[in-house]
Every structure is written in structure tokens, then in C-alpha cells.
Image (cartoon, rainbow, N blue to C red; front, top):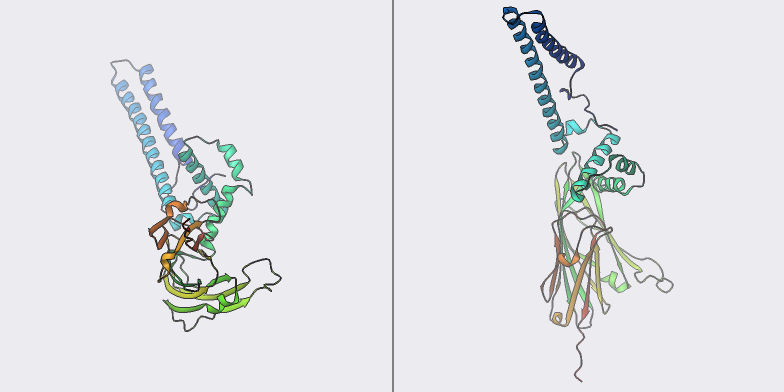
Length: 353
């Protein structure tokens, strides 16, 4: 399918009348030039007059062609700039099929630039026409990341303080700070669900929210604690769940910021902490710190993961600030479902033989 301008004030090519006019102008000019040499003597004044007239017509035709080519080039650059700058008045004229065609062209050129190889347009377009082709799916997936919510997370920060206690349990304090950006012209009122799974009833009983500070007034966040299945018959270790929802209200093209602090206790010998990002996120920082008088007897390890093969290397993201603190951070886009996992274990000291 060819991409074409719609309802555009400036034309992107020759008009038919302009084409014929320039052709006739050039033909007449050439004809006059030859006629002057065939009908008039070399010393005739009329020969000079007709020759000059023919040359002028030929020159006018050439200048007009050059100007038309320059005009076409300017129009092309305007179209290109509209695409690159995402001019709403331009791109809004196209339907979904035409937008997909533009995206396909961009993907093809991107592959050529990265691979430094010329792609066969016919074969490549045939691949893009396939309903299950991964590039088409990637386009749809990328669009859905933003269209599903109408906002994205500008930054997402979590500070996790882990305090090993004398009875070998862990008191865990988590502070979440994030800012959402609405990129639509409409207000967005929704809720962000939080759901945590635990092994025992004691863990969910210890869970409570210490603080919630947001751009909107919220008197109380209702926490739902429940047992999912009977632990005696379940094969899954995490049979208890804590759920609550954070209210979100973002003005058109506005931002929404909140800080949430919650705390719970882990009674297992090894402490595992996992978390997944709920939204597409531009920047994130995850910091794990061992605190308290028993911290020196424990060690912590952490890693990052993504739901698909995104270019993320957890070895470069994880930074050990000191023996008690790990940080995972990045300023690159990361998709929902990506997250972090950390494990805290007691250091086993070898006995002297």
C-alpha cells in the first residue's frame, strides 16, 4: 500500500496541466531553434530573433522544471518533518492500516541501518502482512503498553530495609515512591492494585501500612488479608495473600505522585523478596539495605528480570554500595511485569578443624 497525503493544501507533485505546459514550452523552443536555422539565412535578422526566442523558451522550461523539483523536495521534507515531529494535524488524517504501513517502513529502515544490509522489499512486506509476525505483534504490544492506561511511570523508587532479628526472623520495611505522567487530554481516575503472597498466617497478620502520602486526599486504604487455599492440601507454598488498592487521580497532561510505606515480618530462615513493576517505566531504582545489630551476620543478593528478552543485563544494573546495601537502577524504558528479586541469608561460618 502506498502512503499518500490527504487533504493537504500543498501538492506533492506536478499537476497534469503543468507537465503538459512545460513539455510544450520546451518543444516549441526547440522547434523555433531548428526552424530559424532551416528557413533563414545566417546573416538574417529574423534568424537571430527566432533563435533567441527559442532559446528563451527552452531556458524558461528548464528553470520551471528546476523550480518544480525544488518545490517537490520541499514538500517531501515537510511531510518527513511532520512524521518525525508527530504533527497531530498531519498524522490524524491516516487510518490504522496506513499507520501500520508507515511503521513497517520505519522498521524496515531500522533493520537496514542496524544490519547494514539492503532488505528485499517484496519479501519483507510479505512477512509483515502475516498476522502472527513478531514485528507486527511488537508494534501492537508497544502501542498497548501506553494505550491500556493512558499514562506511564516517570520514575519508580523502592527502599527496602531488612532487619534480621534475634529469633532469626526478619522485619521488613518498604517505602515506595513513584510519579505517573498522564499523556492524554483527559483526566484519569483509577486504582493501582497491590498484591503480596506469603507462606504463613503470621506473615499476613504482621502486615500493615505505616504511611501514605499522595497528591489527593485519602483517609484510609482498606487492606484485605485472606487465605487462598487450605495449606494442608495445597502444593503451592504461598497460600496467603494481602491485597489493597492505591487511588490514582491524574489531571489532563498532569502528573501524580505518591509515597507508600508498609511493613511486615518474615519468619522463614531465608528471606525472599520479589516485586514486579505495574506500568511501563522510564526510570527505576530498587535499594536493599540490611540494618540492625545482627545485620553483619547476614548477606544479601539481588537481580532483575523481564517478561521477554529485553536488553537488560542485571550484572550491570546491580551495584553493591557496601556490604549491607545493594542498588538496582536504570534510566532506560522497562515494560510492565519486569521486576526484582532479592534473597537474604545468614552467613554460615566454617568451624575450625
